[in-house]
Image 1 (cartoon, rainbow, N blue to C red):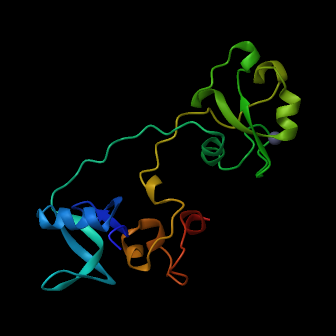
Image 2: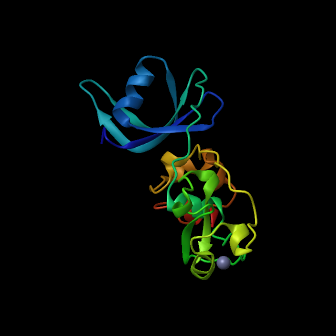
Length: 185
Ligand SMILES: [Zn+2]
């Protein structure tokens, strides 16, 4: 139970991170954090039992580190909104296209990769957009890191939802197993 997940809010109630109950209790004992929501679990100590926190809030503001977004196929598709950057087709059947192809020493960086459908990638082949007479819908760039990355791909307890901006928008009907992707879809 000490391994249970606890949502940490910044002093301004912004979701900041997730820690385990053990870490949350240490933060509370050291007066670094206060409990905001309690879970239904209880810990039985020697002389008393106390409720386990589910959401805690830091008592002083923590600056969120600005993380660089890691370059991966999946992240490029998300950045490009699952849209082929040549023909504009929205599809999940995408490939990663190097704008200046690898054979022409095009680098593997955010600014040189785009989502392309299979047909467009095939048509463009080892050429630049100019050589292939294909125009990009937009200039590729490095996306901002998602500050809520650590909250993706995990089940979110219902009592967390009011603190998570993307969940807050819609009423919670299926609390357990709520997932980031279904929340934004
Ligand atoms: Zn296409």
